[in-house]
Length: 167
Image (cartoon, rainbow, N blue to C red):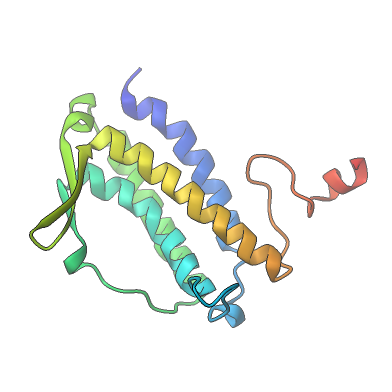
């Protein structure tokens, strides 16, 4: 079994639950923050919508230069979902096309001429999936504080009727 074949089932599961969560982000609350030091809901949702695309980018390119990256903005949930879906498609295609040797190549995160981090692409892709799960978890807390029902991610939530009936 190839490296890509081992990653694809997890990728598909994580993308499905992430999309279901993003669908629930209320446009009217994009400026809301749980704390003054926290990201605004709209920026956190935008980050979560971008992250699936990072997997394909890491497979296709040897470096990401943050000095050339765009900043955060406030987009509608519908627009974030469009970007999310595109990133998922592109990353799925990149994973399907990848050979095991592609995962051994080095990828670097840079800020201009300064290298912030370098690792084999296999490590970077696993970290991207973990990083996405982390920020998705933050998003669940934001939505819970706004009393938005949370969908299942790894199992039932308190908002799932089947869970409530059994409990």
